[in-house]
Image 1 (tube, rainbow, N blue to C red):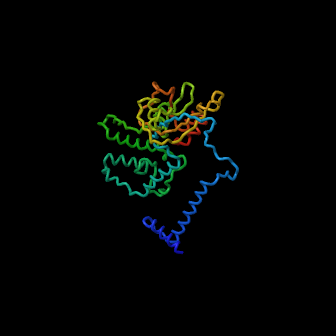
Image 2 (cartoon, rainbow, N blue to C red):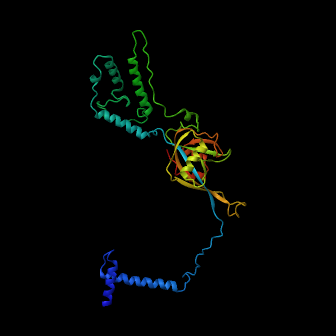
Image 3 (cartoon, helix red, strand yellow):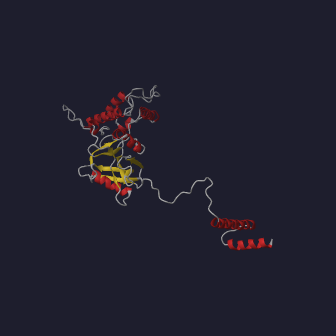
Length: 350
C-alpha cells in the first residue's frame, strides 16, 4: 500500500502543471504505460511472424508493369450568358394577365377629371378609348372590372390578350394615337404620324438566317465556343497541353488568345476546373510494348465568359480551322457520344 501511494504522488507531481486527475486515474495510467513499454520491447526483440492468412508481405520493389502516361491539357468552356429572359409558359402568361385584371378590380376607380379637363380634346379621346376597351389599363384586353361580370377575369383558352406580343402591340397602338393628336396641323392639312420606337425583337437576324458564328443568336440561351481541330478533325472545346509549371487558370487565358485572337474581352472564372475528362488512345501494335508511350489525354475544363468581341481563327496557333457558338442541345449533335457524356453535366441548360 505505501508503494502505491508513492507512485501516485510521483505521477501527480509530474502531471500537476498540465491537468487535474484523481488518484485512481493516475494509477491506471501508470500501469498502462508499463504495459505499452513491455509490448514494444517484445515487438523489437521477438521474431517476425508471417501473416495469419499465409499471404506474403507487399514488396518494396517498384512494379515492372507498363507505366500509364497521359497528356495533361487545359480546356476552356468559353460562354456567352443569356441576354434576355426566357419565353413565358402558357400558364405563366395566363397568370400574369389574371393578376393585372385582379389589380383593376381591387384598385380605386380612375379619376379621369384629374388628368383630363372636361370638354377638352384629351377628354374626348379618353371617352373614345374607354368605350373600346372598357378599362383604363391598355394591355389587358376588353374587360370591365366594375361590371356584373367583373369576377370573370380569367383568360380563355386561345385568347391573345395574354400573349406578350399582343400586349406590346396594344401599348404601341395607344402611344401612336396620342402622338398623332399632338402633331395635328392646321385645318385642311393631314396630321403627321410620329414615329414610335418599338422594342427590339426577341428573334434576331442571325436566328432567321441560321448564322452559327454570330453571338447575336439564341439570346435566351447560353452559347459555348466550339472549334474544329484540323480540316476533318473533331469538334471540341479549345484546349492545349500545360507548359512547364503553368497553372490551369493561366493556361486557359493563353488558350483563349492563341485560339480566338486578341479581339475578345474575356474573363476566366476561378482557379478550379468545372470537371475533367480522360480520353484514352487505346492499345495498338506500336505502343503495347512501349512503357513510355502516351496512353491518352486528361482534359481539365475551366469556365470562361466573353463580354465583347468575336473569335478570329486567322492566326491561331492550335491548328483550328473553324468555330461556332452553340447551345447545349446543338453541342450534343456536334460532339461524339463519348465526348458528350463527359461534358453534358457541366453545360448550362439555358
